[in-house]
Length: 288
Image 1: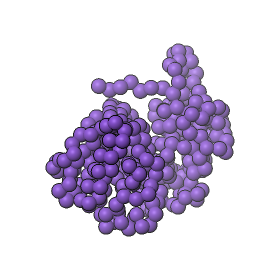
Image 2: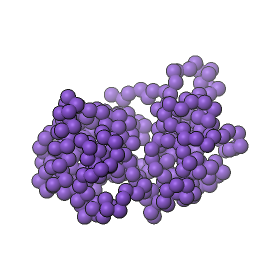
Image 3: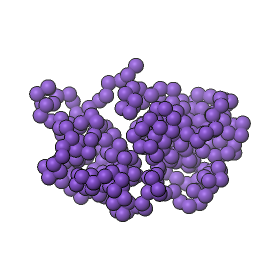
């Protein structure tokens, strides 16, 4: 079943909607200023309204309502813009995103937006692949296929570090997932329906052992169930989402594929077992 998409604010009358939903524009001078501070979920005011206008001008689909409230649709539009610009995808409109938007509002290409933004606080993308670097030791380990757990982000989070083929059905993200205090590398997407949408997911046990091709590494297989999520890229609800080993060819059908050898997979499974046990058999994973 396809779930109805929720608007950032309560539904307005048709006459109000005609006044507040603004299609993409070509005159940046009328879009307003987004200020200088970071804008993120929960922000409100004229700076957010200006951001919504600028996202619409950059091609946000569907066009955002100009209500000055940074809700889920505005968050999604910011993340899509960041992915297309080749900068860190975190849903926060800060210095990098503002620099990229300045280029786009001036009529510059999205590739130039990414290069300009990279000079504001973070390294430039490597080739055509936007990359927010992990430390070099983790990169070296990942190339050997043995990233292993280690100190990372907040517990019960999965963060996106790089995006390839942004916006397409073969979009793939790589990132880090932290459970039970340990961090692992993962891939999502690359085939058919794109990568996992950002958001909150309820995680529950599925199979402690499995031998499905593409979901095992060195004889180690498992899967954990993730709750369904609406995905605007495919116009429907993504279901049967799982966390499992990234076996076979790199990438998944939208699930979270854990990268590493058999020993890494065993350690991840035990960390998931401990996390689930500590939280009564399920927990919320924040992805994005």
